[in-house]
Figure 1 (cartoon, rainbow, N blue to C red):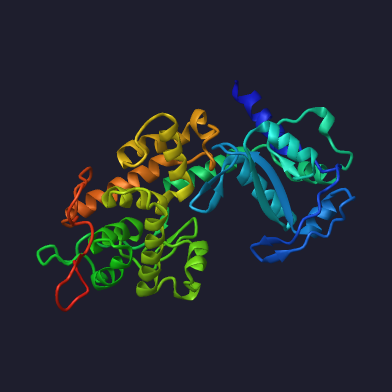
Figure 2 (figure 1 turned 180 degrees about the vertical axis):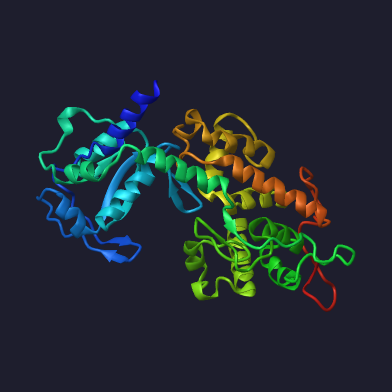
Length: 376
């Protein structure tokens, strides 16, 4: 497809706005970033630009992919999503994304009144009589916005993704002191039954031991906890940069992930799955496991599953029926696990690729016989 035709297609695909002249289904309150929004549109009414603004959100129907929409550490990305997000901001409303499994579902849900904008070329028969939203979008839109969105997304991944001070991976190598937070890692890593040095290696990968670190996606603190995760863990935002509060919350989250992947019997292997889930999300890791299972591969070793995680950036695989969470920038997550394991090995932990079939693993803290509950 030549560049000009492709640009026109993207423009039409994104900007062919279809208002639900069909009856909009009555729904309960919608939870938006600013609180609950009640749908004020009657079940037998049409949904116009005025209705979208009054309701407080624009609903985008789309499919998963790098050009359309994907979730990146809790932040929506994708070229068409970024442009749609800017249009929602122009209207002064939130943007809700409804991901469909294919274009047929997008069209079907649009017919049922389940969305306001869709990112696919629809048949002429689906065009609505209500033109106010489409007219507003056409007045606002500039063709160069697609290229601007593409450059914006590229900048996100080429500049430093985390604002932080870079500290040495060792505070005192000869004394075995990794950081000034070692005592906190030793205190809280046992909650997840982790070696404190593995948690320290993860912390260095996340923030380089800077408690004030912030990522462009919204993650904060030593262990780069997302606001949504902090709320789930009961960590107040005013405490998210406090070292002990941040490490404690991260340890609880690691414990939850260890339990979530309890079907991985080998603890060393399970920790790799947990690291991947911490970085890229449990859903994507489970998708990779589902692909491995479908193709007769081992679903309980990271070496096997990571090969299928890598395929989640390929349409042939992220559109597979067994995949529930769509496209993923999987190379970053694979690299994340490898770097942490390599640094953990430098800290005296288990080298990457080594696993244990029995006995006491040095990855796990051993019960102490005397004074302390755990001996690291």
